[in-house]
Image (cartoon, rainbow, N blue to C red):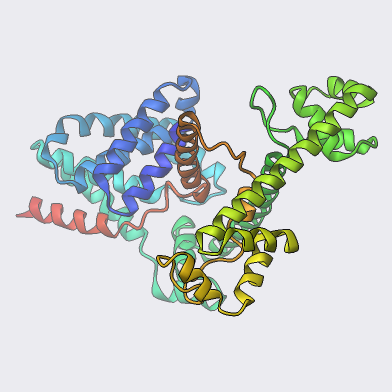
Length: 401
């Protein structure tokens, strides 16, 4: 998984033409893949594509020192792809329903093989590779009339072009591809929403002593037999998601009472923390503390209290006199609802150094995972090939010169 996430992140960097940074991430990805089961790696083309992406970065950086390793990487990449895709991509053709998603990938591979051969003085080998790449480049060019036909059906130009390339310019197959992709995206969207709701619910009930998230399936089982959800969640949380132990605590009057007291205690603590945080934020805006505390007691929420304070005569004058550094509230652009909702999840003790490290790790993991989730099954093969076409012409001209 780490190798896939790093590779996805590197591909995003390549799209932004940050080739040096991408190369560093690809190197980490290669190391992550090296820790995987070799038998599994042999069955897929991920590592081979990563090797091609590394050589592409060498090429785009115009670094001649990469020649010594580029040829080795490309040889490994071709061997791995042919093993994963089958002879003449026969396995790929079966898996993809007769489509040709890998064509652009082979184009880039053959271009890079031709470039490496050229700089190594193997001119005939270079010409053969570049000629093969040129043929694939021509095959990937989408006729305007065919593209216009799909656009007239309501498809976006980029999606239509991609579908035609994947389908070897067959309109019927391209339409089928577009319909299938739309259905997949909708299904993924629904699954993402469901998972997001699950994560939010898990956060609501907290983690176990061993820092495991709440098992929502087991929670729903306890709720289905009549237990109150918040109480059932607390029982599972205390018992590391062990249903039987949680059930024992729920039917035991003594432990049941203790759990209810703890739940209420945490609720009161969160409310106190929220009120304290809201008070401090309003005071920081320049309102006198006594007026702020009274407004919070009257209205209960930070948003309503702030609205009340702003409605008072000469509110800006009071703020300015209390704190001349605070700008006029009418133009400060403050979000009246911000602060209270955020403070509900805080424990009031301030983050420790260890927690900050965990937060940074989580942020990095989210970034890497985000790039992976934004991708699709064809992202490795969906290459624009404009730069490749220019490079093919450049090196064929050098060979002819």
